[in-house]
Length: 331
Image: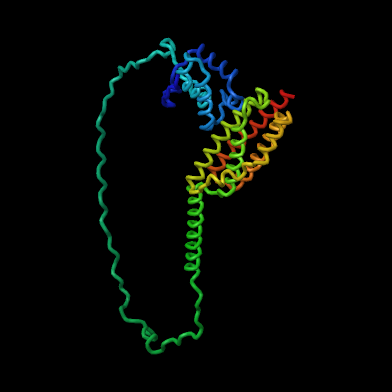
């Protein structure tokens, strides 16, 4: 039965019977891969590719009578566990108390304030001093002052201060513009992303070539399938991110780290009867190299790129833990 789609808000508000919710939780605990099961009721941020992987897994494995509850269950127990519907019974509604208003309000006019009386304007008495010019009133014509020979070219203090303030303001605007532009574009360098997607391509190549007939345990096969799904999803997200920033990665460039030497080692181990041990050692080495490239790219990435790389780093560590548990169970 195909998974029924609905909006996130409708899914969060949908009612799931307790017995259905318990049956779905039991099913997930028994069948969901370890790196996906950790997100159930954890309250942590769930990446979009993880949510899709959980939905695909539940759609493939859930019984028919539980299929219609897959999306509501994911929204209420994984993506937004605090958004479960809270249905109140009629007895829980508080009684409505209506106020008994019996008091009559009356309004009484107040006496208007009398306008202030204007005071008469008093003009100053005319100046009684003599209009005769002072004795030395025309000295500036008869005895003009000689100009000083020294010329002061210094700017007034007020003008210099204004120039400093204006220059500082322009510099501050330039810095703010550069920071704002960097935030809008996401910032960071994209060169270090190339080794990351190449390591992902090698992991996808190795996991795609594994068959159940190659002497691997059930735990090894489960790890192999989980790695292929997780790394393929992560690589698609990184390539989309690079494309939005006009960074193109060709198919030839993407396959530069696909090693024929590693393929020959696995083929030789199959013939020698040591395939399981060689496979586990090879995958552990590849995952550690993948983590190292993720850490290097994180140092120079922008804000959005750091978010993607951090999610991939967490997934890589979970895959290493799953591989070590599989190896311990097979020994």
